[in-house]
Length: 359
Image 1: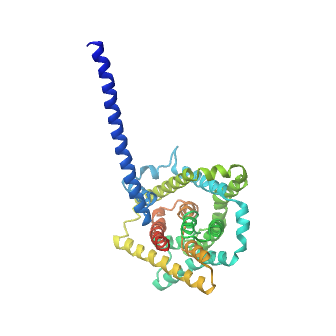
Image 2: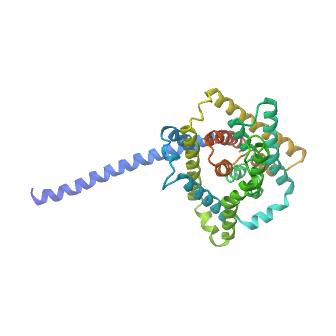
Image 3: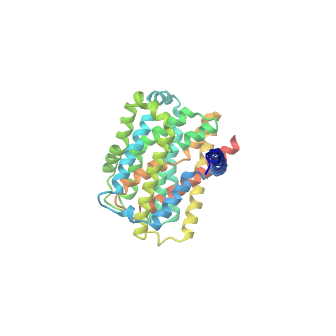
């Protein structure tokens, strides 16, 4: 080929390559924009990527449970325990002790939120169980009461309060205090109600285990807040993805064990539909009682918003972590987590709709 023709073809080929690259980049940008718009639409209804990932983890556990039940050199139980400790260490790293001290002043608001979280919720389930009759041996009832005894959410309640222009410092304070109180109060509730029926449950042992896996990492993180807290806040998105990954792994392991032991055979689709309806009713009853309480106490609008969102939320992070400690080796762990996962999804959907109307 003549040299002049070769030199002429090179720019033409480069130009074609640039055109192809530009077209591909444009297509990827359009795909990214469509995905972002779809994500925003789903987020309005509480169906963010994490909720969809939770559903996917259950499907994977059903189709491929073997890694979740394997007990060998690489044991997922050990991985989840380490992941839980790291979740709460990073949570403590982001906590500002000065903010916690400042938040003590608004004691009426804090009292309302913690009362609903640790007293009203369990009392409502006890009332429902008394009216329905039966025993506490039913796994779904146990899982529902476990949900009721859990602390409020760590992050989503703060986000919701912020979006609704509520009292954000009070929300941070109550989310933090609730997580710490839950280490003691949740095992006590489970112990009081299950010791007589199940036997062998030791609340003191559960509190000790939770203190080692949750409380100790939180305090270790708080001690390092001054030095490394800014880094944790700067990389909050990455740490949030880490938290969600650990939760997904715990959910996968729990449901893999339940599917492997065929613990869902006794439940029909109607059981799940009824459970979804019950969780929705539970949310609105607590929400309505909180509205009534804030009106009686004449809270201002920011405090009312904080009480509404913090009192009605339940923490999936704490729930998945505590389930491994409170119910060790329990073959129906996936069944126990089912009410919590349903409630978590519904609370996101309902509160997202409420925030949309308030804005």
